Image (cartoon, rainbow, N blue to C red; front, top):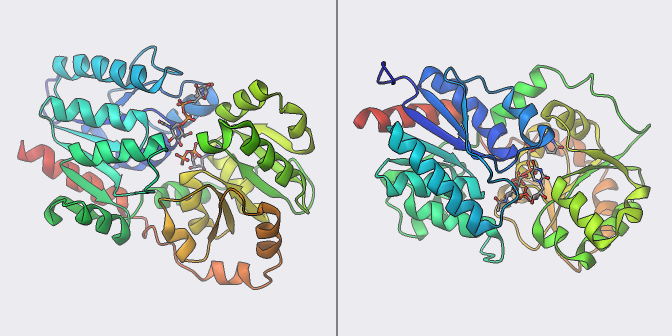
Length: 364
Ligand code: UD1
Ligand code: UDP
């Protein structure tokens, strides 16, 4: 029984590494009003547990069960079923979801079907690539959200073009800016480097790169051909794919680490000569830590990092080696990037989002 009606009345639903990282500052801003529900989509200590330790909501964390590793329909349907039961037992006054994962979809759909207002953080991203599960999640969450917290004017324009009322869109910036700054302030200098001298940091986990043996082996070959040693921080999806396709041998020329903590990752990224990744969050973080990035994907929903000069898109068929050579050979790049502000905001997104959520919840 919740005796104080404003304690834990704003549910924050999350389930994957990037959602935990990016919603942590929102949970902190909400204080006692935050009620955190974890779907269990990511369940390993190094994909979830170590990031949850930075979240200390007063009411603890409620966790759904048995959803990790399921197929999309089973994960989303099972998640809606379990979350509905949780919210029917204790109904939140608003629900916050972030990004474009299956967990985002579970949280947004459940709340909407129960008539609870949905606040979507990082709203309005569009890759226009319907083969990406994330793009479908974005479209579905965009359709059921009541309030859209767009990180950038470009994201807001996407929503306006789809007919979303302007008064339901707020341009807040992206919470990744403050999440990154907090880690940097607490120091990443202690992070040990697995190699001596200049190195390239790489992460790969998108289905378009991991679920096709040819695509994955082309990426491994390109990484092995870099002029510097490559530290490859491996996502479990990628490790499973390399094992399935018999490509582990190709990883032997890379310095492979299992998924690391956020401070460790930013410590590596901050000292890398170049980052190569298909991650969404990393595209944003390089604009805060001022590092050059090659985005290895067909398309991106985050053109701002490219527009600002931090990132370059390397599509299938384009040469990763040639793009890396260009970026590493650009003598003025580091200085230019240091002087370029992040297009993802000034670090006040989570405060704005928490204010919006409290207003929505208090409207009843
Ligand atoms: C999910 C999100 C993706 C996000 C990524 C962040 C969807 C559709 N995709 O992709 O948008 O960029 O999280 O990292 O929601 N696994 C483990 N242990 C874990 C988690 C995953 O072993 O703790 C392995 C399992 O083999 C699992 C696979 O990784 O089947 C994929 O996990 P899943 O959550 O389905 O998708 P991600 O690729 O992590
Ligand atoms: N990250 C991390 N450890 C790692 C790899 C990434 O802490 O080993 C962080 C990274 O700094 C970023 C987030 O995880 O904040 C990105 O998550 P991911 O690439 O899994 O998902 P995406 O952003 O693509 O949805």
